[in-house]
Amino acid sequence: MFRKFLSTADFYEADALLIAGDITAKTISPIIQGRDGKFRAKFAGTVHDALSEAELRPIEQKIADSGQYPARLSEDEYEAIRTEPGRIDALFTELMAQQIGRWTQMAEDHLAPRGVPLLWIGGNDDKPDALMHVRDTPHVRYIDEAVTRFDEDHEILGFGWTNPSPWDTPRELPEDELATRLSRVVKQVKDPEHAIYLMHAPPYGTGLDIAPKLDKSFDPPRPVTQGGQEVLIPVGATSFRDSIQETQPLLTLHGHIHETRNSAKIGRTLAVDPGSEYSTGSLRGAIINLEPNRVLSFQFTTG
Ligand SMILES: [Fe+2]
Picture 1 (cartoon, rainbow, N blue to C red):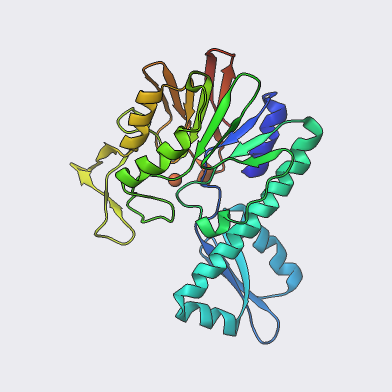
Picture 2 (picture 1 turned 45 degrees about the vertical axis):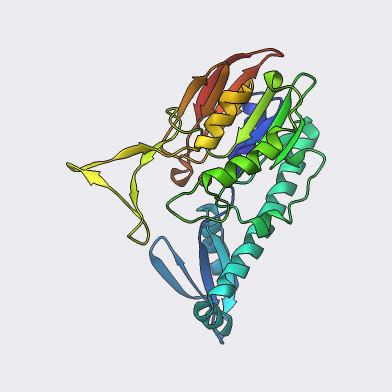
């Protein structure tokens, strides 16, 4: 999916690429190495046993391409991890940091000859401990909780923290704390009229934030149904909506809510969220055609 995303620079002749967060994997897929040196791996519900190194490699690649982290572990390491949750957490952080480093380099190698910059933020699912290790390259810039120049005419603000989700994720905050954290960054914007806000969560009640209502008393949370239908509710951030209403940037770009693919006008501000279908292998995006003083047009893409 990430390789496909990088190729959009050529396909759509983009001047810049933006990512609105949640780029890391949500699960680890353990690959156990027995004392005989053979591997055991599980992919798509099937257990593959007694694999040689050569037999394992394509399965390992499939696991990685499906959006999980394959992790090679000895029997002893696997047992230790199963019994100590802290170790899973540490392994997760390490794998996330490795992935981010690998993808940053991949993006730099692809985009440098084209002179196309990539600006990105984390999302609520990307762990702070992994994001701490992010390093910028000449063409790949991490702009979370920062305001920077986008081009001659525009500034860009990045903000990846979100309002509370049903999943208790690593980078979510109650609305009042979120508002305080956001306002510290918004204050750095010199000219909101020409600013772009790249924010992971969409603003509340704008049609960009419609998702199934979930019952948190189940683990994992389950959709609430009524008459056989999933109940849909707005789940965006009220502090984001308030801040956008107040400061009126030119454009805001969002991710986070997979189910919604929508745009809205909030006063003079255009807000856009392309949604996500990454688990089906389909890349959703939006092409924004930006002029100095206005958004000339935008178009959703699927590919
Ligand atoms: Fe998210």
